[in-house]
Image (cartoon, rainbow, N blue to C red):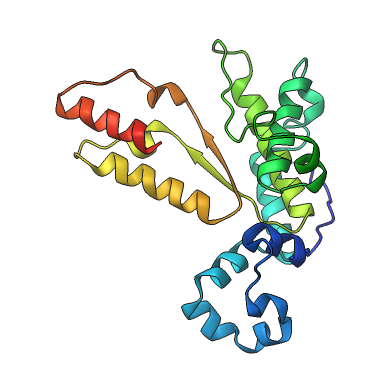
Length: 215
């Protein structure tokens, strides 16, 4: 079953997120943007970033269909989170503050109260991954409702670690550079694979240290 959600094409909110108070000329003059769309795509990185993060109704429908297929709404629903309301609300409010930059949250909460990075800790089988997937689905839908295309970046140790010296750090850097270039939520699965206490002198230990420093 596909749930129907109305998406707003809120270019002002998206521009405020990406550019703040200093908005480029093509953002202030939509008719000029449409006129120069081809050269803007070729030479202006800020335009490329803006266009990637913009949601059209057609684009949203495709994304929502994929979301409902991968994370069925009847299963990945906040109603199925038993006893996890506090954790769910903390994740969602942190997303609203740091990604959507909700003005009310920015006014009343500091970054220490709603941190940008959160670690879910617990024994195996306690529902950490399920809580994350439910929250991630809600984050993407809230972003789309606001007209912001939020990109999920799901990262595992196997996506980063390489047998070749220096490649692991470069691969992690590419992931993080991409995440910082668009409105995004980064989910690191099995974070302990990055957090081993390593400060050694062998090649593998030095590589692990560099990876932790990069992160």
